Length: 84
View 1 (spheres, rainbow, N blue to C red):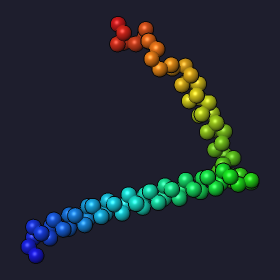
View 2: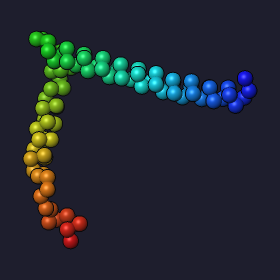
View 3: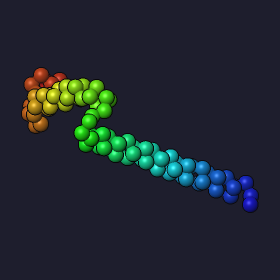
View 4: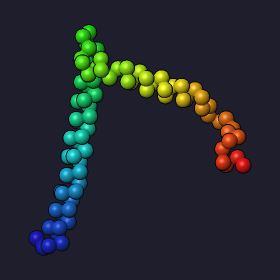
């Protein structure tokens, strides 16, 4: 095996398999965390973290829904710099 063939094989195994394994690992961690979050939300007794973060999440959701109700899609904005 010459240098060129070895470098091509090394590049292929290192980059493609390495990146693929890293993505598979990140996806497994993500789905595991998602499953744990669903399990925690379905438990009768809520965890300390759930009780601690719930008010912040509710406040953020109210803020996002209020801002989305104010902005109507397709409405003209007279104060926009593009409309002048």
